[in-house]
Length: 413
Image 1 (spheres, rainbow, N blue to C red):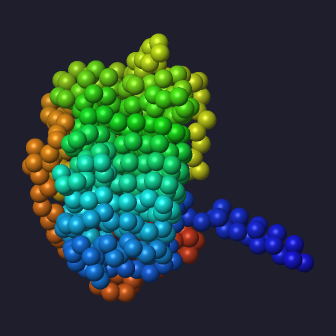
Image 2: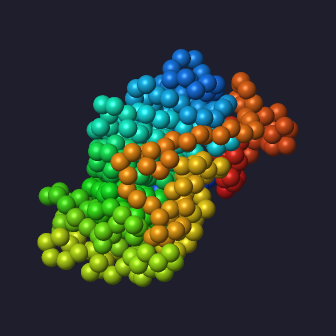
Image 3: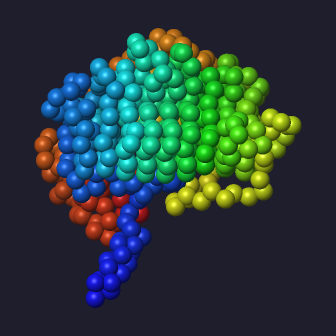
């Protein structure tokens, strides 16, 4: 009897896992099944203080939480913030131009099951943080970052090592700043980068070591090199599909490079625009464009990288249009992201790699706006509850349906 009951329990768990909704309806890639703080406490961030009750640091210090924001603006961090497991950071709840952190790294290391949406993470020239990232992720798993602006990292904007089942989608990654000015060191397994803007990084857009799905990204104004191979003795695999590489004023001729034959790459549908003429008129990338001889990757005829939720594939041109319209914390863009999008849409005329945020006007101001949520409790306004019913068939809780709607998702998908 015990064996039968155990078997039934396992089967029931598998059935439940198969019917669980995605992190949110538009989640894709390897991190799409994260549940974050689903079913947990709703925690309101009510001030911009570095610590204490109602602060962002306190909000993310414990799991089984959905973090919402009653206000907008910059949170001036005094040290690295560590984010717990089983948590949802719902930046789409912040009014106006949203919520942002500055000065120190946001660390997701050794955490798992995290959802992060619509927030700005910015580091800057913080003293004694020369080898830190904006987003640090060592030995983490099962996470998705969606519509996040990740900017001004000192070592890399993203540092990801020994992690697995991660998605970064619809994010702005860059510019990196001194000393390295890099985009991302990715030394991890089963990582999806989809529909991101990589902008004005000196290199590493990303540096790809491990198993990486790299689909429909736009890479603008790289410095030394755009997409970088693992160039090491270990075997690495990547799908490089439908991306648009657009040369800018700081760019070399190397939209991709630093490969070795141990980099096993399936490439398809990529476009490169190298003429700096202000018009989107790139040409299809050819196999030989990825290198030759000892510095060439091993190009493979088909993909073996299969995330649990496929990325809806666009052409490189369609991906560019989506990036311009919606990448980053874009419900209402702030001055920094507006400037970066202006650089991109100049299509070769504007933008530069920088060492200091001051070179592009500094952090600026995150402007406020009308409140989106109700103070206290679950944060859902009474007016919303009166006009909406819980769609149990969707698998999302009521607060998740509300958050999905704020983000423009279709919760009933």
